[in-house]
Image 1 (tube, rainbow over the protein chains, first blue to last red):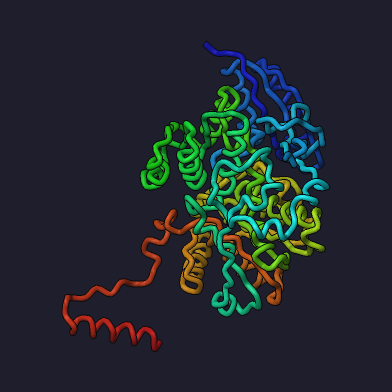
Image 2: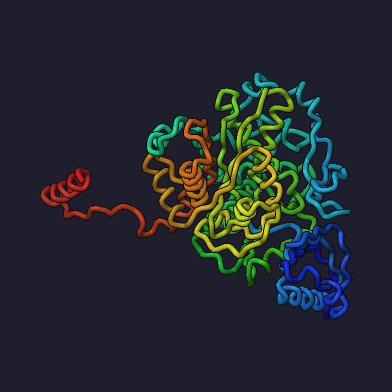
Length: 82
Length: 415
């Protein structure tokens, strides 16, 4: 049984996706709620720090779909394994 | 006496009390310890420091603890070796090795950060310490935690070689091998850190843990006779060590121990995992995460938490970033060993090889007083030298056989 979870992530968008509503589409399709805290968008790159909330299964699918499109999805903690 | 004022967000500057938290509730920026420097200036002078035992705790007012040190009472104050042979080999004027290959108790600079993290964990009342690591951090948490009486949880990727596990498991922590790739382990640890009331040293204790790295900077200055060098080369994984060495110099200036700081800070990475160096060379402040592929496993952090801040420190100081190939890393390990008698792990090879490249490209002046931060012992990564060392002379147990070998040795020397 999937439970409701929150995940804090940093998204890095490649140049070709900057003008696309990538996040909105993912949120709608997988019923994931994004809560944006910080963002930087230039003409060559986009970066967003946000919280995603949804059922664990949906979060997984949503994140995979972002990755498949070329968005880099990483934890805000950075790599924890040192 | 308390010298820490609290925590502050590095992004939005919002302030927080001293608690086991690491991220700003508002902007999700990282939190950092802030101090009352006016008070520290009165309490901490060169003379006070010199009177204290030779450990990292001699700078305790500049570390984020409230009471007395409790963990790692013998850690820090490693030798600053004047590297005359290496200087001659490279044709430079003044070169030093900050030698954390002999750090107490587990032979890497992680002994410093964990000493501070676990002292703070005691102050917070934690009874369990945890980390996720493939090497040095696991060793330090396992050992320091054993001595300090913590329950310990060490998370590793299940694919980690047996030889890497031994130096942790001998201290009998709870070693948990997680099936899945690095991303999976990272994510699980973040979840565990948010669920259990444990001191996860580089997650919820990170603002305190990271401050321990400043002691390398403090010691360099003191061991140079209270002078800051012209340049310092620091290996970069998460980028935290570099930012803290820079912070250490600035703090010494702030409290009047140094008059001026004109040191340039240089960051060293392996080309197979060089997100910070790539950003520096590309003239951007965007750190693009990478999938690591290098022999320098202790620096293999593809998504460095402090990459952006390391980049800022390098630029602010007027330094540079450099990255080197696996072959250059191995070669540098050998050069350091045969010139200075210091056996460094792969990260040390990264530091020296990057320095050599920076020299060659004229990015560091040969007349500079330079310090190389060698952060871990070569015995930890000895396997990378398999088949890459000089030959062994096998002989029969008689004089004739030995003299034949001696002839070969002398011929080789003559060439």
